[in-house]
Image (tube, rainbow, N blue to C red; front, side):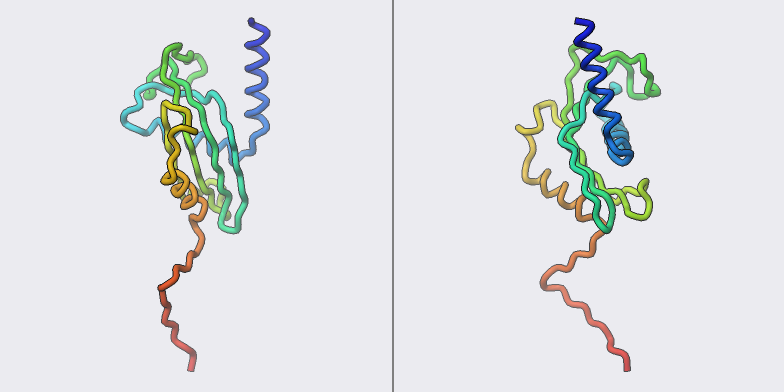
Length: 156
């Protein structure tokens, strides 16, 4: 049993090591956003990250990911410590997180969206969630809407 646990932990570490720096930053941003919510009292840890989509655009880098979180025995006010064990009967959270980082500064966040559920995400994602992520992906772009006019003066 210990061998299986060691194998799972090493695979999780390998998966985390294969992520880009921006993907790591997105996971940290998602955790900070999740813990900033008032109804969250316990510190959560990342269990896994799935379905990562990263696209580089002229206006910045868009990242979409599914984050699985597990509660720990530590309160969220405590600093993140490695000795916080996972609560055995805690309610796990499945989160969709979309973020767009600016092209000039990778630390600049143009827009972000997060939706978390106790249920598996496949059951609870709505068209609204898809629209929100598409809005995040288009952040920083100039959008020309039909029916809008611009009056420009012509040089003499």
